[in-house]
Amino acid sequence: MQDNDVVAAAVLEDACFSLEELASACAVNPEWVIRHVEEGVLISPGGAVLEWRFTSRDLARLRHIRAMERDFDAVPELAGLVADLLDEIDRLRARLRRAGLA
Image 1 (cartoon, rainbow, N blue to C red):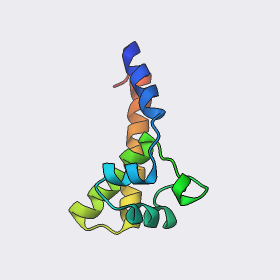
Image 2 (cartoon, rainbow, N blue to C red):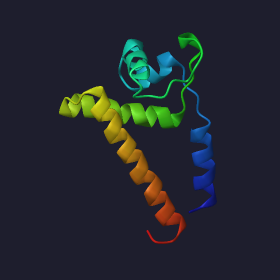
Image 3 (cartoon, rainbow, N blue to C red):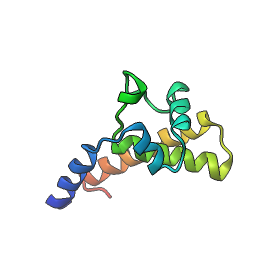
């Protein structure tokens, strides 16, 4: 891993999206995002809906969920489960890289 990779990851992690920005980035309407938060597929950011802020991790997760629903006609719960598994695979790969095994 190079030094500039760490900086780029930190910058992305600090990204903050409003509900409208997140919906636009995922090519969905805000109601779709709200419904997925209410169903527990996306973790609630708390507070009033207009004050919600989302991270780049939320953006990636929601894009995976949207792709599962669109491409495979998956129900939100199944798409959320697949997103959880993809997140876990990413975490395990990162651990392997840090251990020098990847």
